[in-house]
Image 1 (tube, helix red, strand yellow):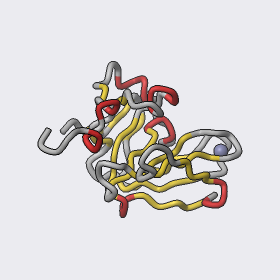
Image 2 (cartoon, rainbow, N blue to C red; image 1 turned 90 degrees about the horizontal axis):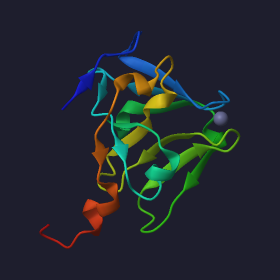
Image 3 (spheres, protein in one colour; image 1 turned 90 degrees about the vertical axis):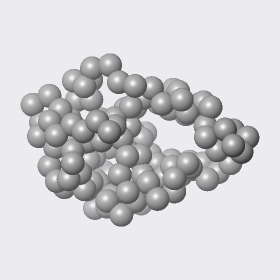
Image 4 (cartoon, helix red, strand yellow; image 1 turned 30 degrees about the horizontal axis):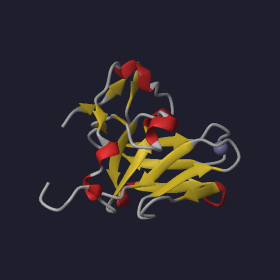
Length: 137
Ligand SMILES: [Zn+2]
């Protein structure tokens, strides 16, 4: 587990705000240990949107503004729920297919955070999703 309590000059707050580009959608994320395991992912949607993701329990993400602006996108097995702002198109978070108790969120939406200050990050092998593999793998 890799924790980042600072990213660039920004200290990650225990409750840190995140927003889409137009500012219509505002989230509050409980990040008591900082940003945990930020990563890229090579699945069919992540490699297109290119966002750096990290995860929090579903209970640790609260939509404080703009819930009506969030659009739900689902594909393939339609289990994962991907949300983006319908005004500016920015991906904010998604409920993971491999663990519905977890939201992945866009680290670049955290206020004051430039995820590229993290340097080279690991890439999750989302194209070979754990839910797509035969049982036992
Ligand atoms: Zn927006």
